[in-house]
Length: 564
Image (cartoon, one colour):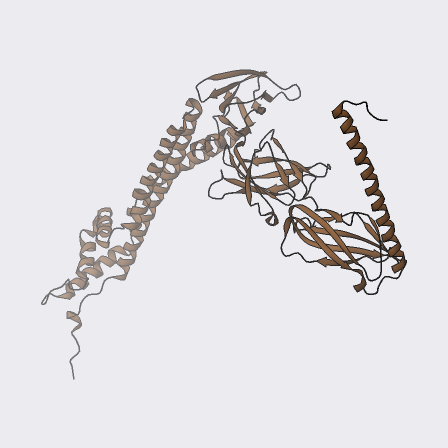
């Protein structure tokens, strides 16, 4: 069996009593130092901030000076936080340093407390050294330490002094701040670098017209409200970019003694302005006079309907005579960047204008396009309205006149037969000669007819290809009609032509109406004999007239008196 270790030679464990008492000292020391730092931070920052606000009220510091003061506040606060608050926590003293501090406050320990800590640490005793002496030392040290309050060696005098001063400064500052009301709040905002608050005076300027953006040439009203001691008059100072200044003396409003205003007409240039009322001064504000958008260049291109085959043509803005069904493409360059706009197309019928939005190039807001469809002959003109990113619209927009021409219907004329009324038999073939012309192209031809005013019927005539003008003949086989027209019936017929307008058309043109009466063969022969007789008679009369003319011509040549 292994022999039990000799307790007299075993290592001496650390004293729990001494360890706990030293930990309490360390905690108190750290807390007192950090608490002193917090008191110093609150009191010092309140004092520095109050002093800065007071100096600002007295001297009216510019923003740059207030910025330097603000940096000073941050630097001072950072120094105290690091060295007086964080460092005590991050670098707490070890047991030896705390024990030494306790021995200095309690001379009865002599060096026993430090020795008791060091000799009970692992490896402190070498081989052959007697631990019994160390145990006796520790026991003696515990006996001395047991009735003592180790934390009494930590002085709280500075902590109590700094805390007292901090409480006084913070409370006094809070009371003064509360008493100062708006003045205190404005000074605090200025201390924290507000650019919008002026130094409060006896006369304090409240709400003003502030920064304003207007279109060049418009009127603007500048105003300010005063508080506190309000005089009867105020001064408004304008400062332009050129360095020129302009001053106005303002009387208080008759209905509101604290209200001062000035209306400026036809503003052409931007400027800064400041109100001076009593000993108060408003924050400097700005009026920006922005140029309205306008048109620097405008190009117009007419796109003819596809059926015309004319393509596109550049048009002069002074001569916008357009074919109905066309499109008018407008490309404009504005005088400045625009956000949106519209074209208002007016009508001669006093109908509501048609609004078409402009297409602004997202990559270049100075490239704008729009397409106006020419859908009606009643369109009379258009105007272009532009709007920039600030919401300012173009003014006194020009009105461009439109003259819209219709696509005329084809013109058709029957050239044969010569007489508008004919007699035909049931077996007849009627020869119809006709001609048609259109401004673009005739696409379809029809022979239209009725029998005794009944239902209208039609026969489509063959047309190989659309043509602008044509002369044709058609043999109308009346005998092939189903049913055949009876004797005594009246046929009314005409030629109809249609153009190739597939946008607003087709345009339809018709010839004069001709008639053909269905008669018997005998009636037709009699009609033909009558017509032959008429022709022979006409030939005889022409021969007699020719003979008389020859005789008169001979008398004139030979100088004989004219025969009567």
